[in-house]
Image (tube, rainbow, N blue to C red):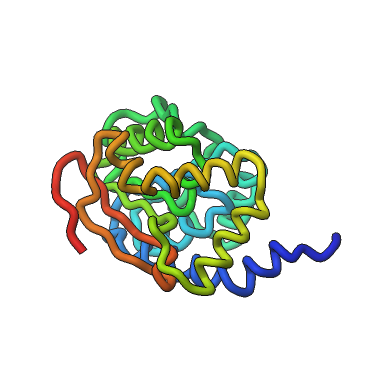
Length: 207
């Protein structure tokens, strides 16, 4: 396998910020809560939340990701987490308010605006408490912001196009509004590159 400058930059500069972001999100989960992790990827956040949650359900549209997450859970002998191959825009297999909390980390900027709003609406149907971590908009300028934008640009294709739309439209604030939600609380992390937002059907923004 050849050297990847994108992978190198991510591991050295971005991954430490993302790991901190995951720990912050996991710390918001209350003991015994039933949680769904939307677009769970390799299951890193799900497995971290499982230390405190009653049960965590991770869902993703990538079979490779779900396989990786499931194998990691088995290897670590984590029994209160499960992973399923599902489309986040249609989670009708779960009844309304099946979970105490619905979370997603660094996924919303990857969706086109319509898809992102549909995912948020599904999350609000499944849980009264929604926690989203993604890029801050606008990002606070600095080396971390420059690297984040460079890595997104390197991804190219639909990924980069969706990222640009996400930022141009106002990030999570606009996505929440499109889904009929409001950001009730927010906290900047990672040198102002990321934001952790608590969303609800009603409420007011606070910082």
